[in-house]
Image (cartoon, rainbow, N blue to C red; front, side, top):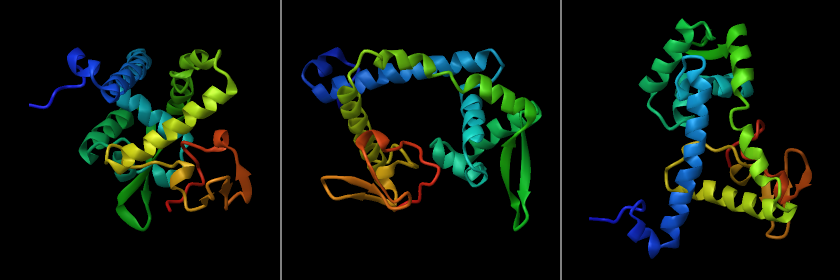
Length: 200
């Protein structure tokens, strides 16, 4: 049987296992922060994530099928969360005139207020990078973007809207360039979630 990365013996001989476990510790911070944000309002972490996503993304991304891909969950799981948010009157839905089975979801006034309140659940992590030099932050960010791209290639992330996967992105190995904005990009300018993203 394959050794688990959570086995301290397996970690001792594998830097990759240590990295994975370190990432899991960081993921735990997000889980707990989301849980606490939701608990106050009687919502699950997923329901909070949906409200925040709806607040910051366009209508075409706010459909059940897209949300299922975004969060790597089944449509029934997303539909159940959407039903709960509808019952609580935190969201509304608008039927697509071209397809009556399809609808987009939008925040109600109450949902907008709640999304505004909870969207800063992860801001408490920002001071952890306060003492880092700009160079260290840039290098770390570059490595994270590469990790996200690798995880998508392995099938762990189904959707990503990063510059590295965008049709407007150019990399001549010396400089980055955005064909949409028609301007050079520095490593720190690359986005994890770009509203103008179009898949390459």
